[in-house]
Length: 271
Length: 252
Image (cartoon, rainbow over the protein chains, first blue to last red):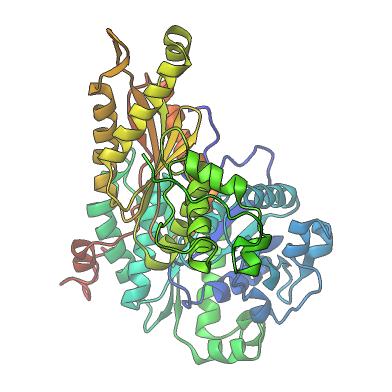
C-alpha cells in the first residue's frame, strides 16, 4: 500500500537516529506510570545515559507535579510556534531533560494530522541529542497514545497486581500486538506485595496472550514475548516522595522501591 | 408532489411586525421547488409558520438535491457527533466510503443524465442496505459515505458486502432499451471503542481502505482491521483463573 499509514503500525524511525525511544504506557491510569517514567529516567542517568522524558500525556499531564516543575514555556508553546523546542526543554532534578506538555494541550488531546506531524518533528529533532527518550503517554489507548507509542522502538507497560490494571494492561498488549504488529513488550509491575509477584503476573499475561493474541497476529508463528523488566515493591517511601514532590531515587535511594527502579534501568541499559 | 405553498404576504398583511419586515420570497420559492410542504394549518406569518419555514430550510440545506441523501455538510455534523458518542458510550462505529467504479465511462458513453440515474440508483441501494439509524450521505461526485453507529466488527464486513452485492446485481434503465449495471468499491474504518479520534483522520483511514479496494481490482469491500480492545469473558477467566496464584514460570 503506497499511502501513508496513520495509526496502525509503528512509524518508521529514520536512520541516523541515536536515541533508543521507549514509550511508557499503562492502559489504566493511576498505576504509577508517571512515577516510573520520572524515576526510571533518573536511574538511567546514573547508568551514564543522556535521557529526555517527553510528556505525551496531552491534556491530562502530571509529570510537572511529580517533578515539581511549573515552567512558563511548555510543549504547548512549541506546538503553537510561540517558542522553540530548545526553550521548552528543562533540566529535571534527576539529571535528565524533560519536555512538559502543559495544561493548555487539552486542545491537542485529539490526534489530528497537525498533532501527528508536530510529535514526529519533535522526536526527530531530539533523537540525535540523547541516548534515550522516554515517552510518558497518557492513560488509556486513545489515538494519541497509540500514535505516541508508534514512535517508540520499545514499549514498557506499567501495571499493578490489581485485576482492573491487569485487564487494561492486557487490552493494551493486545492492541499493540495486533495493530502495531509488535512481537515483544516490556512489563514493569508496580506495587507488588512481595518480590516474585511480578513474575507470576507476567506468566499469567503471557499465558493469555499465547492463547488469545498470538493466533490472531499477522504472523502467528512468531511467539509474542512479554518480558518482565522490573518489579517495584509497595513501599511507604514512594508515597512520601510523591507527596514531597521529589524523586524517590533522590530522596530515598536506599528504599526497596528505588532498588526496583534501579534494577529496571540496569536491565534496560544492558540490553 | 406538493401542496401549494402560501405566498408571502405582501405589505402589512401580517399583524406580526417581525415577519412583516422579513423578505421570505426566495426561501419560499426554494422550498416550493424542492417539494417541501409548509403546514397549511399554521397562520401565515405566525411564529409557528416561521418555525416551519426555518425547519424546512434546515432540512433543505442538509440534503443532496439529486439523491435526497444527507449532503456533505450534514455528514460532517453527524460524524462529529458520532465521534463524541463513541468516546463517551464506548460502542464501536464504522465509516464506509463508497465510490462508483469507472463512473466517468458511464458519463462519457451514456451522457450525464444516465450518470445521474446511476448515482440515484446507488443512493437508493445504499439506503436499502442499512438501518434507519445509519447516516447515508453523498460525499461528492460519485462518492458516498455511510456512518454506522454501534457496529460490532463482525457486522461491518457483512453490511459492506451486502451493499456491494446489491449494487452489482442491480439493473439501471438509463433509456428505453438501454440498461446497464455498475459496481462499487468500498473502504471502511472503525472508530474503536473508547477512543477519541478526529473526523479528518477517520475519513482518511476509510479512504485508505477505499484506495486499497480500487487498486486490488474494484468491486470489493476492504475494511481496516478493527482494533480489538475488548477483553472477553474467556480471556478474563484465564487472566484471573484457577492458576492465579500459581507460579507458572519455571524458576531456572
